[in-house]
Image (cartoon, rainbow, N blue to C red; front, side, top):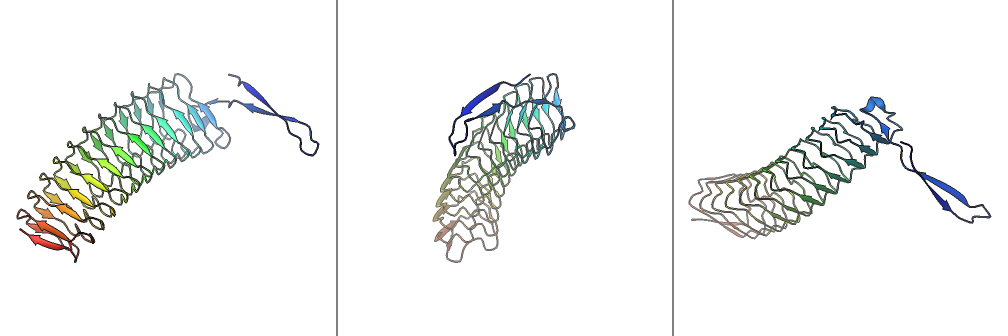
Length: 322
């Protein structure tokens, strides 16, 4: 298809020079099934040919000149690392014919700012948007049931994400180092929050954990430096190691009587924590669980606790045993 041409006439008077015309062309899209059809240093705009049903593994891996791609609605699957390290890819529209997006499909696409996943997609694989540092917004459709491990790892520009109530679990390191993520609502369909799921989400101010969640993984909210308050529902049975480690402005937390164990370093270095109630359901408190909680002046240990780890409390905390 021949491109349309828009002519913009720019007039200027510079030292008696004549006015000149600048021509701006619509980009020409080249048809390509994979990188073998491309000049990887020159081709910026491509169109997958109609009739193609799958984009194979590593199809455009490392095509750094690629800026935009059009996928036809004949495509049903996008392969493993299909667009990995396409560092200049800014826009891609996934048609509603796509059912599966493979492992690390857009990993390292550092210029990708926004993407819409259609509700035909049933699976988001691990590392799908790993290190997409400029990704600001994404809408997950309610056809997805799991956010897998490392899915949005180091998406440091991500400010907003809507998790639908079709999701049942958030994988390990799913939102690791999403440092501009300010708020997230976890639907009551979620039963588990993976290890290090929100590690170093340092702008996260509020998070509501629904009463469907039964476990909070190791390091789930480590280093969430803006987190002031969190309510743990009475469905949670265990709080993992480092779960809230170094949440430095967290002042108060209520542990429900469903919790049986508090992991190592679970609240370590929560230096603003002034009050915490340990229910009589808890049987074990791990190493360094409340270590360096310098504002915690007193804590009452119920009779149910049979095991307390090394350095569980700061030296200035008055520990009272029932």
